[in-house]
Length: 219
Image (cartoon, rainbow, N blue to C red; front, side):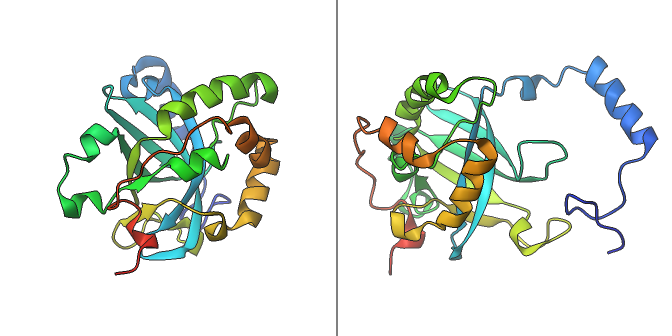
């Protein structure tokens, strides 16, 4: 491939013509599905095929119903950002109705929430104030199951999405986590994962279905 932009995508920067068209569209089109996005979540996903590989994921989520959420996933919270995947989240009630093989494609959020690793970045509000709202949202997320596919393996340095979609999972224990990546994330967002863990001490662990989180289970 020829050129690669500073953000890692193939090709030269966008042209003035492209920029003008984007500006006009943003003024005249509704973008209704995007305006329904109500939460920005940040966490780390691991490849189900290789749990030693972890990728930071910025989720922008919409509620479809009381039982179903959907999120588009970017590699960064600023523009330009690469859209790298999607995640669907469902309540235990929905998850338990799935067949055995389907349930194995989903992951839990209990550890992500209680460890403080799953965050809702908000640089516009002081951390001490925002953590109350964030913790309230975590009470809702902690019991959900997620099904995630990444299309762009940015951790390999791919300049475009290559290969088949990769099923992704989440961390379930401290020893699985690349803490250097978490530290780097915390510094960029000016937050403290350990403090968030403490703030969530009253969140009770949920019972996780045996079929979830399959990448961490031996055959």
